Length: 327
Image 1: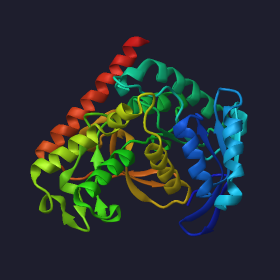
Image 2 (image 1 turned 90 degrees about the horizontal axis):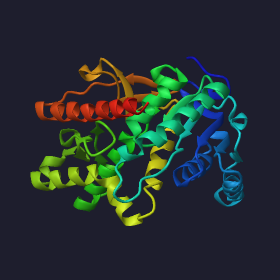
Image 3 (image 1 turned 60 degrees about the horizontal axis):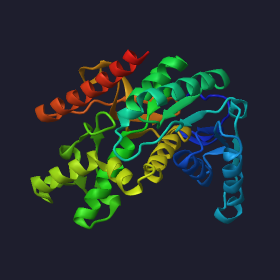
């Protein structure tokens, strides 16, 4: 087993803690990430970074002051300079502008590409061995920007999308059936947007196929609500977008990595032939462990599911092309 500097081993295949995890962006998503990371004690130090002076320092101090109440010893440190995050094992990147009502994720393209490019170069400078989890939208394209700017291997630049999308799908199913969320297994593939592909054929409740519990029209309605899940929250908030569930999803991925849990989670991965696709980020099942993506898992898809996945991939490609045209 290869163990990067800063990781402490307790026993085979279980990583107790890592020295540092950094969160870039101290807005709602980033601040929620840092609080969850600290509460779960996933690192000795959680570094909250932001370009606005005082914001990460204030939020970091506030979170640390909750430690005696919540009972965690992870130190939360706010900073503006990336030197504070030197040699961090994992970076969760949330920096960028959020959606407003009427905006699509793609509307954020040029502004957030500039932000992610700058952030990625700083990560490469201070933590060349880090694993990067990208949360900023449009997710799949921003992950590609991070990959290109860091020049890290694909295993170490991962997009957070499928974990969130699958969580939304599961939450809607639980509401529909009035059952425990714990019993629902599901899988959402594809790009992080309206073309995502919730797979009804891989959805079950305590092992019972969803198709035995709901009619097709209700399943279709749940799938459509999942695709529009982020926009539904934006329409309610008016001045922002979701942050509790996105933060929880990113932290779940970080936990799988620093504890080497080898969990199989849907993530945006840089495909190199898997699913017949190459040179793009797309949501697929991945095994996450100490090296980031340990393996991309290919599942069998029927003709309709494969067509939907290819359509989602084409949307990602068109968004990448739109960004390149702005250069």
